[in-house]
Amino acid sequence: METVFRSAAPDDAPAMARLVANAWQKAYRGILSDQYLDGIDVDLRSRRVRKTIETDSDFWYYVLEADGELAGVAGLCKLSDEDLPNVGEIMIFYIRPDKQRQGLGKRMMQYALDALKNKGLPRVALWVLTDNRPARAFYEAAGFRPDGAAKTLPYLENAHTVRYVYGGTL
Image (cartoon, rainbow, N blue to C red):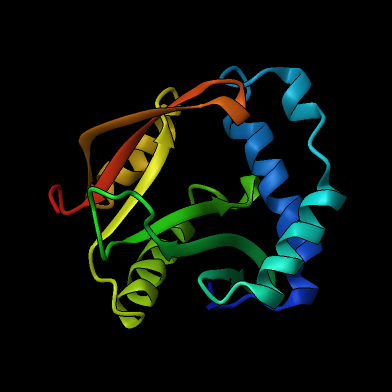
């Protein structure tokens, strides 16, 4: 399977928003409420993604294409956690649900790690919902380890999250 990992363009925003919404609806069903998941406004998210691509030089959206189709979305930035300065963050990382378990996530993870390294951020962290066991297993298989940090997200139905760091320690 031929893959291309590239910087997202503004015109990618609608497809990116649909992919992430579909991934959320699959991954977070049973973690977040059906009402929340079924109420995702893809058009609003698309506009926000487009605006970020066009105006935010501190947030980097990438897409993974597999055989010419959008198969993944990654959002990278500098981690804002004060206890880990100069660390990159994988803030968004989703593979299209019908393309999962085909090795694309592993490829996209390596691309994302390389992209952060190329931006001068070789140390990497990410936050994941505590109850998202498949994602946690994926991140652990990719070399991430929980570092003990946790937080609750009031804007996301008070979901609990844990922080993972690449290589186990920073």
